[in-house]
Length: 517
Picture 1 (tube, rainbow, N blue to C red):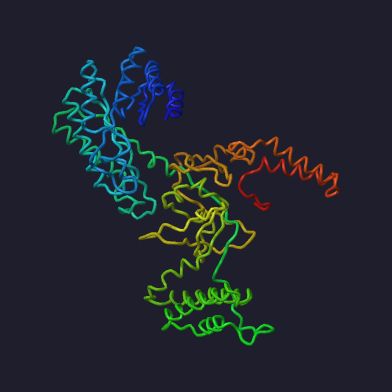
Picture 2: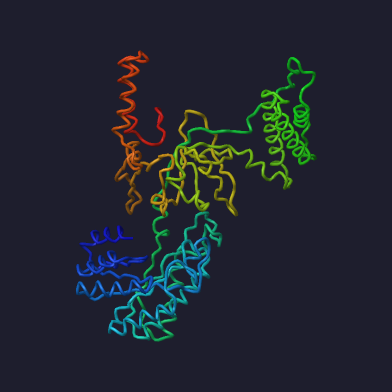
């Protein structure tokens, strides 16, 4: 992007020989900046995404008296694998067709500048999980490269783009959140495929460039967050006997009596039958309540018995060598909800947007066996602010094993491999801002230290981002306090205390802060 280009121009003042490759759509100002960078001595290559960009490159580089080094992005027929496979193929967002690539070469040749075409680029997608797609795409790219070189282009670089995966679930398979190859295998295959094609065609070996952003940065960040509370469905108690009918009633509601009878008589040989009976009894209780024929107390008792019965059936099913398939959803239905001090939309937006899997685990109490199965809920008001898909040995599971949580204790979880895209994609849903950041460095001996701590957004920061007038907000609260003092709703000291607390709140963290941690 243009901001990234301007940043790189400043960052490479001491190392002008570093290769700068400019992908994406470009307008006049952007391309002029590349010409100016070239004039400063930068090793910069604008990559053509459409024919119009070539015309702008020729115009601005001539205007500033420099000769361009040009790349082209080609639209491969070969597609990657997984969610981002459409980054390549005939309907890809970026890239030139074979006809357009030849048109670029023809235009340059007509101006005696075919030697300026030096880089060939493609992008097969992100998180390619199957090495076969990599091999197929690299072979096609290498063939195009050698044909351009033999046609007179001054080819020097082959940019294979991104795609190198991260094994998020540790399975080392072709699952979309894993990869069925190693880093060494990926590198060896890329080099071998390009070398073989170049040798066959008698073309000099190129400098190979990759843009493996995800693979480079995913491991560099871990998100640590604390648990604030837990909601459990399997801790409901059932009375030894049902209460007598209320005054004016001759008998208890039939669904209440029936579901209580099921609870008392649950047996392994009839688990599915009992489970279906419970569902029917609960539905009938809800119907009676909705038409005013069941009291709130009786409905609450039905709910308690239902969940206690579910827990009882689940525990019996766990002990069976082959539990009934019909009961497979009970584990997730009875899983706890752990409420955590984070915003999914700010810190792990891909969980919400594309059902991304990240490995999550407690970062302490590691000597204790976790006994609870839970999903994770964030602080936002959005029902999508949750994590209910977790890494498993062979598949995706609907819960994570966590330790029992007690109110008031500190319990910390870590989400790993979140270094790619999450921080920049995060948004201010419910005005939860950037989190605190600790930069940790590790030396060659494995010793580590905290190099820098960056404070997260304060409330006043995020309010300013969305264009609230802080002076006006404070002024309104101050006027209300003054009015309350006049009307004797509060004392002067209470008014001053409220204003002091309000001002401190504006300077405070957007996430929850408790006194004991």
